[in-house]
Length: 406
Image (cartoon, rainbow, N blue to C red; front, side, top):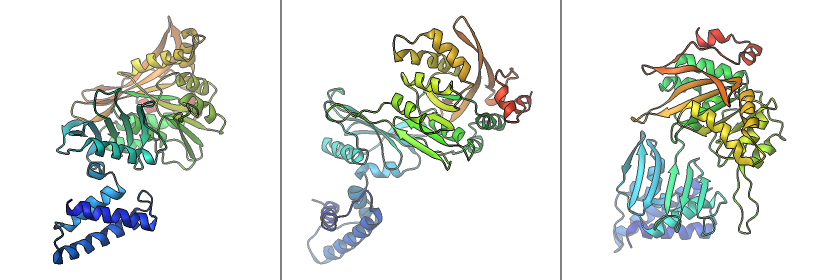
């Protein structure tokens, strides 16, 4: 046993004797670690104990082991790392700037299991043979996804997607080069005017960040209800209630799906509804809510803005055989106003690629639409196309021609 392991064991025993909770009492545990490391260092000078080495590094290792996530903690603390995934104990990858790299970190099967168990401890979610998948939020807001054998072939598959906050408002997206000033002004006015907005994009395209930035433009007096599979949205507003889904318990009951949350949100006096991500039949409940006059926003996985519009017309059909396209498509046309599509370039840079206006007319099952902003020579610029839904802007005191620069 090396010196760090000895100190770790001593600290764990002290934590147990004093009844501390490392997850909630970090400062107290840190003082305990500092004292234990210094004490061990002094003892090692006059005894045969193995040397501890650099005290700062040892203190960090011990604290990460007892109050953090052990060898993964330095990766979680690195602001440049966006995602961490484990294919096997000896294959730990990270993503920086949208590009993946294999780390030198090597774990054991038991370390991976222990780390996952510790990560799930604060979430109330479980992982076993009957539930081999789990989605959970870590205390720092990162999203954890785990799959275990026999769904995976041999090893536990672990993904930790960190929510690296690079922008909280549309103006900051402009500073990062992800959005043009004209598009930012237009989108801010669209949110303030109560337009219903769908954010689309591929995985890791920045949909959640964009949704957060759009949400920051909501009026300060509005009551906002958010519903998500796991908590990811962080809106800088004063009146926000967030709800997340819940897995079923060991008896197979107690599950709360996203559809249920959308329905419950309508009973909570919302001025605005935000659905973190639409994947399945909850799209129907969201459309019904938006069609009742409640402004809202949501995100969806799609390759383009037009694909997102087609997808949001298809997902509600999963709600049951009695739901038909003849009902869904006109409903989408009557309540959805804009699709904002985000993309990630090969360089890892994320940007808004297109803003699509959704019209009210439907011909042969296809909804009329017009591209308002598009990328031209790398710049997101107005196209000069007409704006099908001017009424909401007019009621909010905006001239659409001024916003579009036409």
